[in-house]
Image (cartoon, rainbow, N blue to C red; front, side):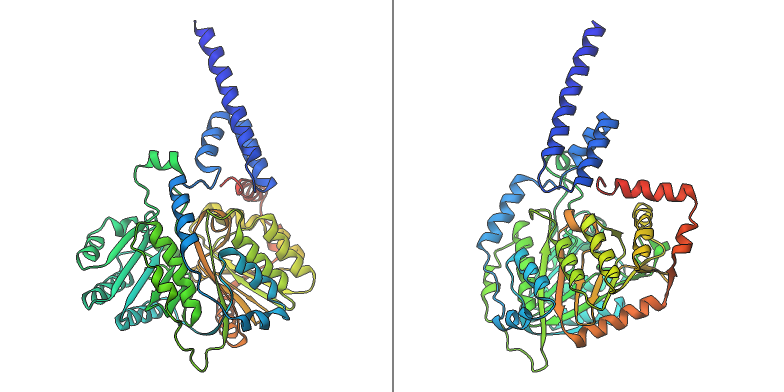
Length: 480
């Protein structure tokens, strides 16, 4: 009897394992390295590997939510761009990156934008609060992490003041990243004060969430849109730089930018799609309002890029890579989490080998030991190609920036890691403007001055156990 049960169980286990292996092999649009990593995991640790693949192996989102997003995006009017912007870009080095960015959301490049770079994280929050206090018609806020600290509560109070004077306030906070705030009395205060606040990608019961999709598909966007004409975009969450939930890595060093012009309407498109997908009211009319008159000094060409697991390919990777390939003289990148795929790693090393000065700045102390170890496994290849590597000392450099030749740049919420490329809903802003790019480059130089340069000799001195650990984590990165 026991022998018969064991035989039946073995046959069933083999059949299920074969089915999962075939599913992993047949899944479209997967990198060969990722496919191979999952096949090895399933074969070496059958039961654990199969469960892990079914829960985490695919960027699954519930069919109901997928259909809802698709229907909303299909009917939302896409704000127009400027034909002159396309003509101006056509003959330059950056036509390719802007054309690729347009293919992601169907949003064209825009002219007539102006931008300002906040001095630091606290200054950014103070200016955002001032803008909320000045809003007359609408305030739309989207954060991944919102904490009940000084800056977080300053934002909450400003939103309540806006709602009290009749401004329509809509708020999205990621259900997992902002779970503490959502469970607190402050979230209830928002509802009581007339703010329409909704959790993005609600988790619900953990078991059911894992069955219908993935719990770690998150809304990582960071946007504040005011009166349909002003937008704040960057890397900062609704929190103090001391980031008290992880204080030993503080301060969190972020970058936030304030934009006026038609690109704000394009950011509104991203917010509208997320908002309506979470059951919010129909805000379609805001996308059809006439664009405000451009200011005399508004000359920046800008384009928004919104990516997420609903797209059929890792579009943010493609946009980063296209801009890297466009570099002719200099490429400076900051990112807190560096776990590149093959496409991005090849673009960086190729740029350095063809004579571009490639500078990569990452934090010395990372809040994720796994990411830190995986990142350092790529150091030998980067340094051998001629990439200049720096590790930021004073805190966790959380800013996600890329400046090319002092003329074009990407800034926003996406990290240079697989999570941002494949799992998170992200927003990045691509722009071309020498003056504003120079301001961002100046900020990058401040960060580089506070960093230690990593040399090939230093990396070669890593102990064998340390190298084994780093390379093991890098091997797992397609799985993780």
